[in-house]
Length: 185
Image 1 (cartoon, rainbow, N blue to C red):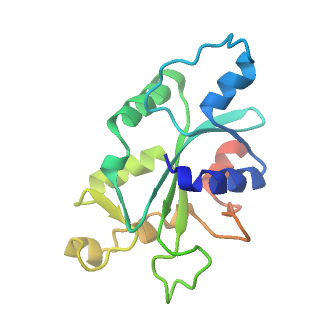
Image 2 (image 1 turned 135 degrees about the vertical axis):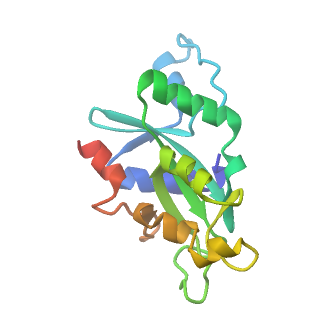
């Protein structure tokens, strides 16, 4: 889990008009002090539950510096994700943050200024089959496969439709983002 950015992500999602909570918080809220609800053993469950109106989804948070290693989406998370999708029809999203410099830096001078993407988990699984290396780079520069460099096979280009711009203190959700569409259907 991206504990470092959890408060930032939570603040951002709530500023969009959604409610978030961690799965453990949900069990405490509904179970109270008497612990009437027993938290199930769910290794690999997503980091947060997001809801608005009658819709609910799960969001997994991941961060890295210059590239996201596909192995960072661990096997137990893959098993949990498939189970939730196949058995319950759950919608699972990935909030991915890449970069090392503050997000409000000039990207011309600081190409690794932090950027964020919110994408359906299926998109990550498709990327994994497309990318010839085991890492999705933020920017496919020197050191990456030449085909990846030539075809701009990196997060900045491949995930452009899912990118979240930085606002004043949080990430913004564009009007045409598919996450917003999911909740408006």
